[in-house]
Length: 160
Image (cartoon, rainbow, N blue to C red; front, side, top):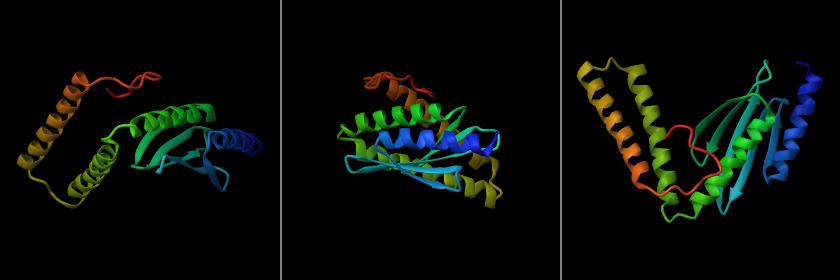
C-alpha cells in the first residue's frame, strides 16, 4: 500500500472523527489519538494502521479495552460511533461511575494475574482456585445479563 494512499485515507478518517466531535492527534501519520468528552467523562482511543493496511483500535479511557483489528477506516469510525453511543447511554445510569471503577479494577486484576504467572511458579492448587473463581465470575455475568433489561439496540453485543 503506497504512502500517498495511506496519507489520503488518514486525512479522510481524521475529518470524520473531528466531525463526530473528537480531537485527533496524529503521530508519524500512522498512529492516531482521538479524545471525546461525554458529559465530563473523557473517552480516548488510539489506533494505528499496520503495513498491511489494517486498523488496530484500542479504547484507552475511561478504561482500557482492545476493540480489535479492522479492514478500513470506516470500520474504525463505526465502532467508535457505537462505543460513544453506548457510553452516552450508560452515562445516564446512576451506576455509571461504579461501572467504570469496576472495569478499571478488572483491568488491574488482569495485570496482577499476568505478573503472577510471569514472575512466580504458581502451584496447581492455586491455579485451580483462580480458574474456578474466573468461571464463577463469568457465570455471574451471564446470569446478570439474563435478568437485566437491555437498553442499547443499535448493535448486538460481541461477547454475550
